[in-house]
Image 1 (spheres, rainbow, N blue to C red):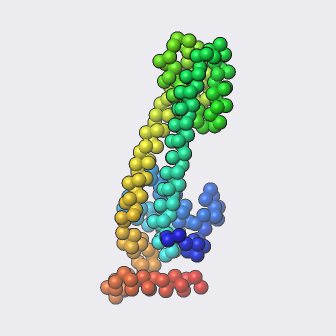
Image 2 (cartoon, rainbow, N blue to C red; image 1 turned 90 degrees about the vertical axis):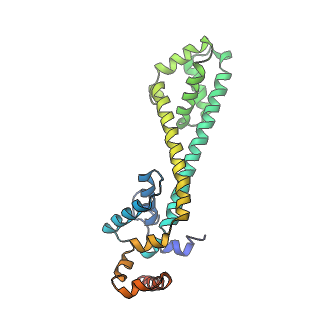
Image 3 (tube, rainbow, N blue to C red; image 1 turned 180 degrees about the horizontal axis):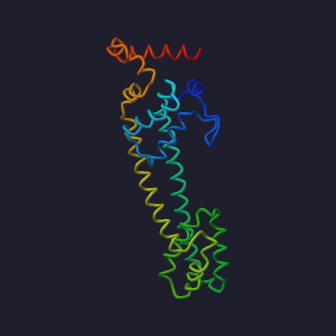
Amino acid sequence: REHLPAGYYRLLPKLADGPLRGYPRVYGLAWAIVAHTDSRFDPDWLVRFVRAYQRVQPLTIGELWAVPISLRIVMVENLRRLAVRIVGAQMARQGADKFVDELLPDMGTRPADLIERAMRSLGSVSLWPAFAVQLVQRLRYRAAGTTALLEWLHREPAAHGGSTDEIVQAQHAGEAAANLTVRNLITSMRAIAAFDWRGFFEEVSLVDAALRQDPDFVAMDFRTRDLYRHAIEDLARG
């Protein structure tokens, strides 16, 4: 509401095609920055990125002022996505614990049938890796009667996206990467809030670069320079 009101949003040029079609072009730029830096905010890298982008497609004054709020929006969305994944993995691990705790009375059932029952309880195939990791870790320390199920897990990897060892390694690597990204997100949100965005704007604005060829413009204070830029915006809309 404060940094991207509806009227301002409507004026931002929108993307005509691609996965972000219909979204503001500056949102696509912010999405690319966050994706290529693992949500790590680096002011110098941001300046270089925006300058490189503008060598192909100049950005409007309004778009440059929308960079900070666009970065925040993308980072909050990234944090939401990671939170859903983390919560899902926790639920899958709890489901595996419950499955193992209730397993021994049903050892007469074939391993494949037990796994089918477990998969139905998950409700999502994407939760299988976290479930499988917890299942393997629990079964290794259970009674010998669970050996058949453990052997089945090692023997029938194709249906679940890899061997149990590969699933365990991938799950641990994914959790470590998610933890790092969350740390980057929290640190970056703080850095974005403290960053001097007025200095960033004047460093990357092509309009400002043209106006700064006049020494009198450079000698003005920021508020006066901003009046000139607003006047140019108003003229450009016409």
